[in-house]
Length: 277
Image (cartoon, rainbow, N blue to C red; front, side):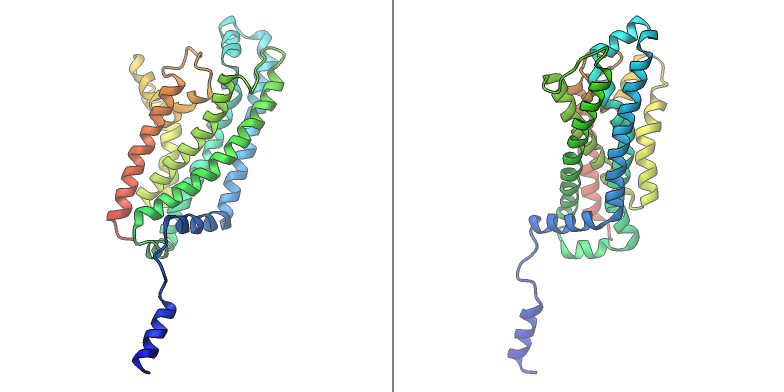
């Protein structure tokens, strides 16, 4: 074969440009929407959110006449928290699993090699995954939050009236989406660090449901503040800020959760860049 023919053949198979960030996001979106685990996880999140909203608000409404004065007052001052927080506390399970599987499943199957081969700048590949996960979870979570609020507010209206146009309610609804999105990014970071689906899921669930309870057993206000500083404590961003049992305000809870995302995310980016795949 002549030199000219070799050059023509080589130029025919060589990519014309290195994939940019938009290309990586498009690729990750294709993978994200083609996985059955994505639809299962998002479906479970939706059903669990609506289910626990109905269960919590119906229970409090039914038991309201028998509650003590302090609990009734808390019901009225933080109604939006009663509507949204139970939904997020359990629906986050599905988001945590989704965040871990999005990256750890690629390591377990070896597909991560193809991903990193297509994106030599490995941090860009991980950021594209994070952007895809964040966009999908936030949009769906906001739709779910609005549905939960409308259903829950209708159930409790006999004892407390709340409107979605009220600034406090609006902030809480936005907080629902922010919380679910940031928890998903925490899970994605842990999945990147541990590289194994079972290990990643176990770690993120232990952090969300076990560790906060353990540190909360420390006597005095230290235990309460440490428990509130865990990622799960950021559910306060879905409240009115008037619940006396919360040690942090909604704004402080958001900053704490952002801090977790920043620290774990930076560790994940460093790991992706330095470790072999």
